[in-house]
Length: 364
Image (cartoon, rainbow, N blue to C red; front, side, top):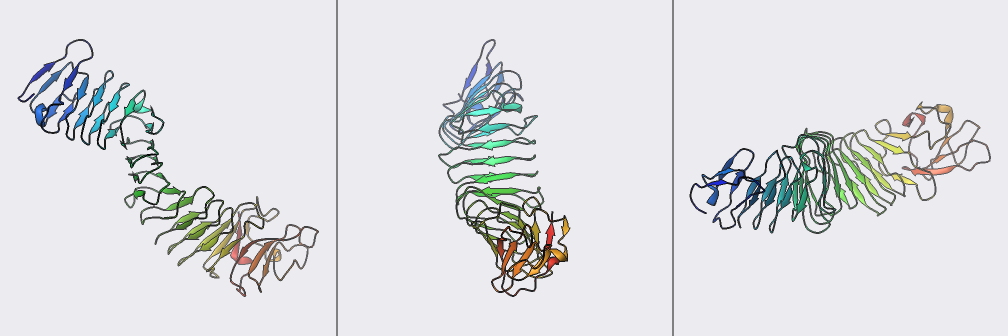
């Protein structure tokens, strides 16, 4: 209880119980420190397990052996360190902290699994939030409720699942998976090249560089004022690069591509067909570029499109024509065999009458 107490566990698996404390406690069994509430001034020896108070506690285990840390009531932070630890947050919004892990951790609160580094063999119960290591972590939240996932240093993957989650990347090239418009992504400028994978309409913040839409819904994806890469899904998307030098790829679906200000590149690298015709609303000659994947546009030579492979008209003019621009409709077509028997396939629409030429296309 109160006072500067000495607790000696001796042999066995021993527990220091602070459930009656009148304030939150901070105990580190590895460092041998105790402060706050009834823990103030206490000395703990041979103690493996801790029961926290009804307030906000910070409980840290040991590097040797398995610890059981029970947070109890309150918003608690639990760090088991090494060993197969049991972390039970109790009620409140509780955090499992792996900041000191010597390797990356892989934790799914939804699946109840933990592996890698200090998380290896851990059992997490009633934990809502995770703090990762200085390495590459994979942190997954729960389908129910709001989670806070902080990756720290390293190239992390953060997936909040359902609920309005807060995803914090830290340094490194991080991937954020968002599935709710109420999700929040926090990333500081200069902390790596980061990617948001979203299954809902999304606008990237000023510190995130890449946006990839997921699933098959008809979604809207917006870049920011910097250089972005924006990619669609299999639905009919609206993709906006914003200002900056952007790369925009609609992938499948009949997408609407808006480059915005800056020198933008529009990528075509998915199977052609009537359900995959993208509209570029603001193509600017000499500033923008159309990138063609030669695995899709078979027969085109890598590099700038040859002048002889481009033709303005309603159909190929000779056997070498491959990219056809219908100036009246704005349609762009790929003709696999020029004057052969294979029909040209439309893959994009630009502004009718645009002064487009072979120099606007680059083949990769």
